[in-house]
Length: 146
Image (cartoon, helix red, strand yellow):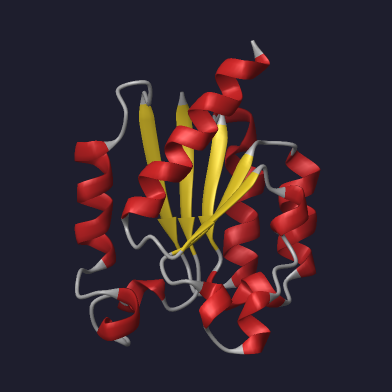
């Protein structure tokens, strides 16, 4: 199984931005940890981070025929990006939405996700471990499709 893990705006600042909220590890540290700890069912993980909505949409369009699943932490795009929602919905690739923090315990605007309904699952509040949960959700979903 080949998966694309997308991290959106400001996630390049992990370890710097609000470490009490998001942790002290950098995105690079988390990506290395994911590679080491991901299930052996994963043949390849492609990591992508951008602060630009259009670039995130472009990578989905570019890779959708080459991947089996998407894990996306859209950052603030979660709350308003209908173009991101349309991109995910258009390619019909199983997608899991993830957030490091518990978005339900934060500001009221963070509780709204415009992509939740088109994703197979949503994981939040588990820190970096949430990425492994998302990988396992994708694997189980794909196995049940066979």
